[in-house]
Length: 234
Ligand code: 5GP
Image (cartoon, rainbow, N blue to C red):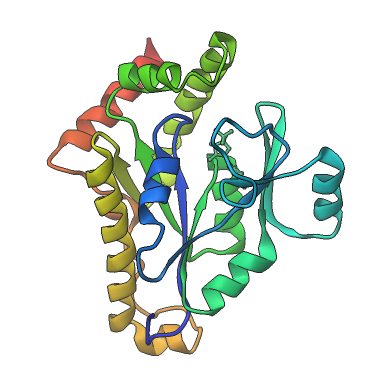
């Protein structure tokens, strides 16, 4: 795809039920985009396919992969393990693909340590009420698990400032377009830095501040983030 060489690594995080999976599904098949398939010990949901949504494995297999240093990062979430297998991600990036990891905030921070040039994108649901409604409508979780996931959502949203971009998933199609626009603009940014990126050296232009890159869409993202912050203070 790119004639500038390697692809980029993108991380998509956001509360469970925010529609990250649907956005990723919408990006499947777009030129130059590949999704990383994580390994997990959790049970498959209805309609989930092994090797597509996740590699569903037993705990022993997961532990073995940890020992063999086979993960970029892994985390224990809701009592189950989730991890990003290293080799396929590396191969896809080297072949010029833009690779998307859909992982939690802790995993994103682990990746940032190892791959500082990673681009972090946070997906926000349009409101706290809508987030609850989506989780309930999914019909796959008990109410106890929904409460756990909502609590975790608060903790994750509190870390949004660590991210480079914010996309609001109100309408799925628009959110998917926004995500694709981010991928495209990062690719286009390469052309101005092609010389440095090609040689694998860090670009010698000043880094754009994270805050400046956090996309504030017509003021609505800012208002929404403030709403989440207020909710936590109560
Ligand atoms: P779910 O059980 O709803 O599919 O995922 C629960 C959480 O695990 C989500 O926040 C999802 O982004 C995160 N997750 C999925 N795969 C990985 C992974 O490989 N590593 C990490 N750290 N988190 C993951």
